[in-house]
Structure formats: structure tokens, C-alpha cells
Length: 160
Image (cartoon, rainbow, N blue to C red; front, top):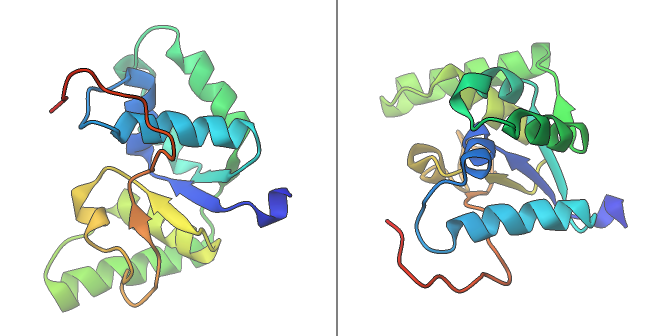
């Protein structure tokens, strides 16, 4: 069953949103929580780069959440950066610097390259710059989107 489950790549910002229980637009945090729950039930597979461990600073998350974060990381695929990831990340940064005139941050390039090379079905993020690349990440057909809840909770107040 796990081999047929969709593979979602998670950008660091999703882990931070979850750990901080961020106040976001209606339904966004439902998507984060539901994907984590679906992962626990083995309905989906989650992956991220080992870079995520570097980007999540203990001092920037609520007390006691580091253990929760470490526990989640142990249950998902963490991919190391190797020469293939580095080469593709370099190519992505070059493409956006030369072809489009936009700069792609190095960590974002590493995350995108990892998702592309490891054939993620979707790249989940809240980063608007990355969301705008969906379907054409420098010629790669990677879907970049926010995590979606199939069964969102009712929000009594609209969050901004």
C-alpha cells in the first residue's frame, strides 16, 4: 500500500507553521494537520531534505515542540544533499537568475531539486514565490501547492 501512496515533499515553512500553530487563512492549517494525520495512517508518504533540520531553529519554536518535530522527522523520509541535488539546485538557481531575472534562494533551490530528483508527486509549501512555479519549475513538471484538507474543520472566525 505504501508504494502506491502519493509522495509529498514538505518545505520547511510547513513544519514551522505546524510547530507554531500559525494563524493562517481558513483551511490552510487544516491541510497541514490532515496531511500529517494521513501520513501517520500511511495514506501518504512525506519527505523533506535534511536541510529542514538546519532551517528549523529550536529557539524559534514553542517550548517542548522540538521533541514533537524530531518525532515527526523520524517517521518521514529525509534526503541528504548529494552531487546530483547540488547540480540541479545550481541549474535551477541559474535558470531563474538568467532566464527570468528572479533570484531563487539557495535553500529553496535545494528543496525543489530534491523533490524533482526523488519524484515527489507534489511539493507542499506556503511560499508564494514557489507556488507561482507550479507545473513548470525550470522545465520540470513539479506540482507546487499548499497541502489540502479533504475534510477541513469548520472555522468559526476567518483568519488573515
